[in-house]
Image (cartoon, rainbow, N blue to C red; front, side, top):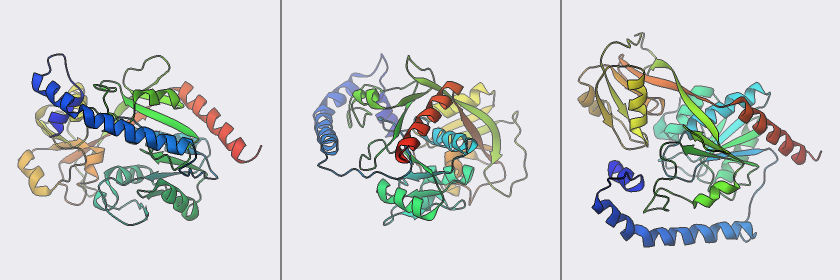
Length: 337
């Protein structure tokens, strides 16, 4: 299904006629989706729907397309940047695929089945205070009450307008960008491309255009998925690679660019739930490589010869300076200075 959707939303020049027909059949639903999202945004703009402001700065990290664009590495980058600048950041997120009432704190050893793969990954990597919940306002208020935080990062919260935002970061995939530029379900857009005109920063995972800030996801090291593993990764030994992310081919390309010999690759659905049996059928005892987001879902049953590739987001000094200037401006206003 994901492969079909990708071909529909991100067509190439030689796209089959059948995909074009499906796109136009879905266009009326896209028009309805646009109408609903437009009315909703107007209700918040006009004050008919309540927007809740917080006493600390709120940074929104999101996108207007469905699927991965590099939001999670960006959130981790911001956590580390803010800490270096003396801030005490906290994070709120939805907790995709997890059902629970109200809000929930994310602890470092919690599994993805309890909090979602991205929150589990963020907290495992950074130990940042984090609260998840479908209502970002309730999650943010609980975060402030439970932890000593002075700035909040909202992961994937661009369309959650009830939470007042001070700074918006729009993250784009430099290869896919806006795809066919149609709204759901005919295209990948959650909002019109005009939305990019109203954010503070546009960060592009890849080649950036004028007015955008380039971000590089830099591979750093291969880490054992199992905490008890003592095996050292051998970059010359053929391995199997899997990826349950929105754009699996990006991960496989990264491995090939690093000259890692691959026996085969296997793409899964984004947010795929893994089992030992299913992965053993793929690997046949060969070394297994995966993304860090997938690894948090495999920690409890990982074999000794499974590794994930850790990547770090890299942004420019100019972006860092402009963002910090904006944050200090926001703090001055909130403190009444």
